[in-house]
Length: 419
Ligand SMILES: Cc1cc2nc3c(=O)[nH]c(=O)nc-3n(C[C@H](O)[C@H](O)[C@H](O)COP(=O)(O)O)c2cc1C
Image (cartoon, rainbow, N blue to C red; front, side):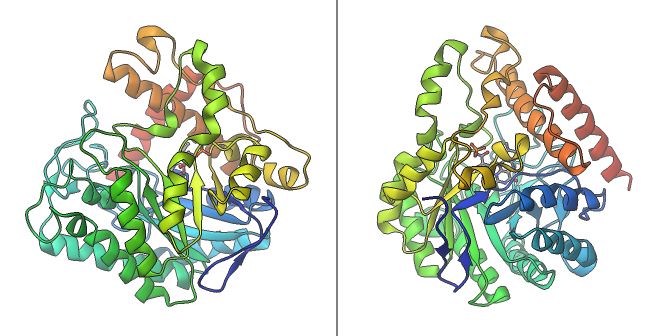
């Protein structure tokens, strides 16, 4: 049942089983500082009643962002703003974990023309991402140190935990994947070598925050791309993470080349997709739970109270991760916990630019990408509204969301360049 508390290995107990999973906010200043918009947004989410809120990507290195508008946490420079953010969440009765992240090759050209990656394997997405440079040993060591340093700053700022982002094709996920990691040194080749950066980063984070502070990892069950990180390798990494002593494993899937949770369906498939929706990554959960010694949180597609309770009761997951529903109904957890709300809205089914060539299943990769951008942009727009103290706007059109997103993203990138 979603209303039961969850004790974590570090000694902390979460009040219920609902978590707002990470969503990049894009609300930071050009210098990467948190803003009053973050506070307003998270006040709404914290008051909503979920036991746990995880921030969107907080970048460990300001040169390499997932998106202009990311918060950057390299040192104490933005401490006051981070403190205010955490204090707002606490004042509204929830708990805030910071997601620490490095994008690797998934760093847009507008942010950096020469991103870093395990190997110089360029993203197969037209235009937007530069050819990455293979990282040197020194750069790899620097990333490990940065993960630890950022986690330490967040603890000092009053955050309640940290989550290491090793999913969705970001840097740690790139190291795990044989498709993107073609190194022949100690950081590539065998799975043990490919997992080294993740495990060393987790160790650095643990060393920085101590044994009683929650440390989580978000990991792909599978990359869903040919030659990528797959379910069998995932199980071995979960065993190693169990040995490393983490408090919560979040299970997700996909990369920018295959955004699993944005996968849309043709209109005539929608009813079918809705029926299967709650099982997005659950099919991997039993095997993961069998080897994991830490609590597990499955994220992606949960939309009904019955589906959530069922997954918890069957022991397929210990915590329910949810993201998009928080953008349209930030207060839903309290009503769902009280048994007054059986199901959440599913706006994503209509967030497409068209059908056929214009749709998400278009034969053109450009159109597929634009449909993904449309969906992301629609949720970003709702996040911005909440940050401005406004109500969500479910009627926002997909085209308006796409154009608004692209123009704002360009504006933010320029503001950052010339700041
Ligand atoms: C607008 C948006 C931004 C996101 N940003 C992040 C992020 O910063 N870090 C992350 O790990 N996942 C991110 N995600 C993925 C979500 O955490 C989650 O895994 C995914 O949306 C599936 O859950 P849902 O079906 O409940 O939305 C984002 C998703 C959306 C829609």
